[in-house]
Amino acid sequence: MTTTQVFLKQVADEAIGVGDPSRIDCRSSRIKDPKRAEAKIRRKLRDERITELPCDGDSIEATIAEIVGVKVLCKSTRDLEIFKEELTQSVSTSGYRFAEPPDDYVAAPKPSGYRAYHAVLEIPSTLATKTHLVRVEVQVKTRLQDSWSELTHEDMYKPGEGFKPTGFHRKVARTMADLLSTVDQLADDLAAELETQQDRNTEPTPEEAASADTTVVTVTRSTPRYALAMDQDGQRGLIPARSVKSQLVDSGVIDQDDFIDVSDHIAEGNRLHVERVDNEDGVFYYPVSLPPDARSAGPSLQGKTSAGGHHGPADGIGRSSHRRALVFSTLAQVVHQFCRCGHPGEE
Image (cartoon, rainbow, N blue to C red; front, side):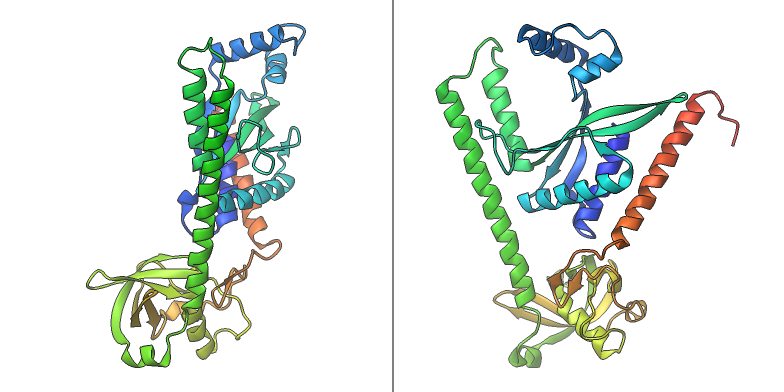
C-alpha cells in the first residue's frame, strides 16, 4: 500500500509540475477489513459468480482484487484527466503494470451516475526471498465525485443493509451525480477563464506604466505560469510570466522564442523591486530587475511556460527524474525487507 502511494505521488507530481500539491491527493488508502472481505466472497458464492470458497492467499486475492485500495482525489476534472494520462505513461516505464484494462466511468458513467477512473495495478512486494505481485485497486475521482459516493453509500445502504434502493432512490442519486458533474465542469470553466485572464493581463498599458508605483515585494509562491508576491502593506499581486520573460530577453539570457518556467527564475522568499499596477482585473507586479541567480538560469529545459502559455514537458526530461525516483523507492523497499530478514548489521 505504501509503495503504491509513493508511486502515485510521483505520478501526481509529474502531472501537475511545480504548483499547488493539494490539487491531487494520494493519501487515502485502506486494506480491506477481513470480515467485509469474507462477506463479499460469500456473496459471490451465493450469486454463483464463483463456484467454491477460496482457501489460500492467492485464490482469495484472485477473488477480491481490491484487498488493497488507494483513492486519488483531484480538485477538478482537468486534474483527473492529466493524472490519468500521466499514470498510463508512468506505468509503461516503471516496471509496474495494469492487472487488467482500466475502467473509465468518467467518460462513461454508470447508470447510477457514479463517475471515477478505476485501475488495478500489480505491485511487486518482496518478502524474504519471494516476490509477490500484489493487486492494488486505484480509484481516481474529483472531490465532488467522492462526496457523492460517500453520501449515496451511507444513505442508500447503511441504514438497514436489508433494504434495497427503490427507483426513487436511484433517480435522486443519479440527479445528484449529474448536478455535481455540472459543478465540476463549471469549476473547470472558471479555472480556464482565470488562466486566460492571467495571460491577457501581462503588459501594462502606457497610461498604467506612466502612473505605476515602484515598490519592493516578497515572493510568496512561484509556479511555472506566474508568481505571487506581497508588498510591505500586505497587498498581494501577481507577477506574470511575460514580464519575467521580458526581463530575461532584455538581459540577453534567453531568446524571444525560448520557453521559460517562472519558478526557475523567481523563488519563494525573493525580494524584488517592481512596478505596481492596480486595475479592474487585479493587482500586478512587473519586476524592474530579477535576482542575480535568476538572470543566469537560462531557458527552461522543460519548456512549460512561454509568455504566459503552457506547454508539456519535453520528451524524456521529466520521465528521467521520475524513473530515478522509482529506482530509489525500490531500493528503499529492498533495504527494508533485508533488515526484516534478520541481517540488520550487514551492509
